[in-house]
Each structure stands twice: as C-alpha cells, then as structure tokens.
Length: 399
Image (spheres, rainbow, N blue to C red):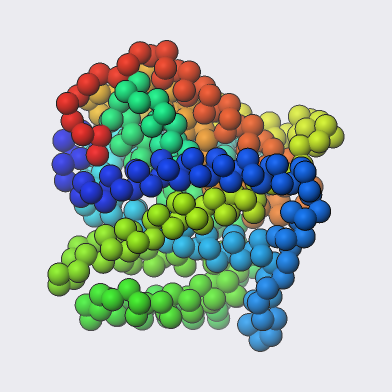
C-alpha cells in the first residue's frame, strides 16, 4: 500500500467520512455511557422500553420489539453505508489494485483469524463456541476518534491504513453474519430477494439515477430477507454494493447517498444502536460471572491480544515477504499502536453478540467483555502511540 494512492481517492468525500466517523465516535461514547447509566439506575424502564412491540403481526409478521427494529431495520441503513464505502474503496479508493490492497487485506485477515482462534481456544466444545464472530471486527468510529485525540502522534498514513483494514474486516464480518448467524433458510423468500436484486441491477442498466426510485425495492428486499432467515441487514450491504461508484450522467449517485446518509448513520443510528444494546447491569454478581466466564475471556483476549498480534504479525510478515508495504510515515511502533486500537470492536461486536446470545444470560457476559476489551484496547493503543513520540510530518494532507 503506497501513500501516493491517496491522490486517487475523492478527497472531499473521504474527508467527510473521517470527520463524521470521528464525531460519531464521540457521540457513540456518550450514548454508551447513557445506556450503562440508564440500565443500572432504572433497569426496569430500560428493559420495558426496548421490549415494546411495534408493527403489524399479520400477515407480515412484523410485530417486532423496539430493540429488534433498531437492530434489524435501522442497522440495515448502517450496513448500507458500509456497503457504499466498500464499493468506493474497491472502485476508486485504497483497494482498487491488488498491490495496494495486499497489505491492509493481509493485516485484516490476521486481525480476524487470530481473535477468532483465541476465542475458540477458550470455548471449543463449550456452550459459547458460536460466539467466535464477536471479536473479529473493528469499530472504525471509535478508532478514528482515538486517533484524532492523539493528533500528530498518529501519522496520517496510519489513519488511512486502519480505515482500509476496517473496511476489509467489515467485509469479513458481513460474510460471517450472512453465513454463520442466519436462521433456518426459507428458500422461497430468499429467491424473491434474489429477484429484487435482479430488478435493481436492471434499473441500473437503464441508468436510473434517482435514489428515491430504489426505496420501494429496498424495503421489499429487506422484508424478504427478514422472512428468509438471512439477516435482514444484508439487504443494506447488497444495495450499497450495487450502487454505481462512477457518475450516471451528471449525477454522482454514490457520493450523493454517502453525503446524505453517512452523518445520519454515524451520528444517529449507531448511537441509537448503542443506547439499545450497551445497557447492561454492572452489579457485583454480573462482574463476578463475567470474570469466571470463558466467553468473556475469549472476547477480551481475542480483541486485545488477538487484534494486536494478528494485525501486527500479518502486516510484518507481508512486508518481509514483499507482498505489500506500509505507508511511508508508518513505522513498526505506529503499527503496533494502531493494531491495539483496532481491538475496539464495539458496534459490530455487540451486534454479533446479540445474534449469538440474544435472550440468554450469556449476552450480558459478552456485553461486559466487549466493554472491558474496548476500554483496554483503546488505552493500550493510546499508550503505545503516545510513547512512540510525535509522528513525522509528511507535509501531506491526511485525506
């Protein structure tokens, strides 16, 4: 991955993306604290609100809890924005060529595989074995927020490198959710969803560029995937990847959608998700249960140790084998600090935890572990980067 590649990335959209994610990280932190305070000060009202049922029961089977509407419907918008950013990077960004994508791709694979293996080392054969997907993803909002606070101690190349790594492990997390965390498949509904995708592709071929026209197909696709057993948020990813990254006529469709939706996703949807999911009772008994749980130890060590070792080890191996290179201003100490920050897995980790352990006592244990791991990983990364001295001034804009 070379630093000159950044000149090919549309500068304003990427700058907006990083700014929104950084601000979103702050709002996300506030929402998390609010959820914890609320759940511990008034657990009855917290649980009652999010278990409130909304929607028609027949014939659409959409009588879902408010918690489910946030996780299944609003998070589909979050994953749509993720899909847009993946499409951008694959077509005009950091992941366009195999050579430039090699280093972040290898680092991301290491950063997913090692945490999963550490988790399974604690839980193979146990009741918590299905939670191996919890520690695989990085919360880029928190990571960019932390890098922003560190200022020049985190070189600009590290921001772009970690952004590329996070995008690739988002792809990995999406695949894991679709393949391993879907219920029994209703193939008729799934076939209907495939038909909607064909319709969307045909609309693209006809050069239809007005996003409003795609709203009804998007809603129908979400509903059919919800009925099929494949997690409904995958509808968002699919539509994001189908969005044209290059202009149709004089309309920049992807830029338009990302400009409008990314602030909503980063500043409203993800904090609302945290408010609905991060609330967990931190009683002495709950903390004692977590301390003695292999699920908790697998999550904490997977995120803190696994992410640091996996990303650092894979990146150094790729550099040694000359199959990829780090940005010019990123040294080994910066890589270690950034890899540690990548252990902040918060949003997607909570999402997978709910898919795995929803409705069981293990969910509270997993949530506590994710909170602890994210705090430890963030602190560790900040300490490593702060102790490494001020980043070298490259004279280039970070975006």
